[in-house]
Length: 195
Image (cartoon, rainbow, N blue to C red):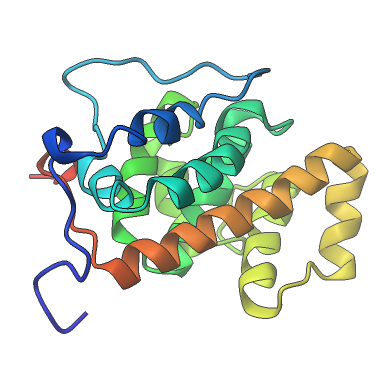
């Protein structure tokens, strides 16, 4: 970005349209497999992202239906999901997405060493064959919109069809968010800034 200001500035919560409540509720799928993050004052709230999305509640609700599945109803484990999301954020240099998901990755059991290695990618030492293939799949999808046959063979040897489909849609969903957040100029919230 060449400008320090957001291209689409976030609305403060008191200005969110009434429809935004339904748009946020769409994040909660009817048959969640994974727990929702705890609501505590010390957790990031995502107000700059949500405030920007509050400018278009109908679009937000539609996207949140997909994103709610990816976050809470996916057949992938939360740890697997966060490896994928953080690799997308790293490759796309999506700072907002990265900082938000470092917190969620910690909740899912991804340790600091693994988070650092995600930046290095699938070639970094220490990954299991499945983790390496998942990270490679992210790189391949972002580069060529297709998982290569060797990577697919490793993934298909460990994951069932639903998990394979969830993997592709997770990468796509967070690639879309990276594009949106970077293009809109969404700034880090104070509760996401590291000292």
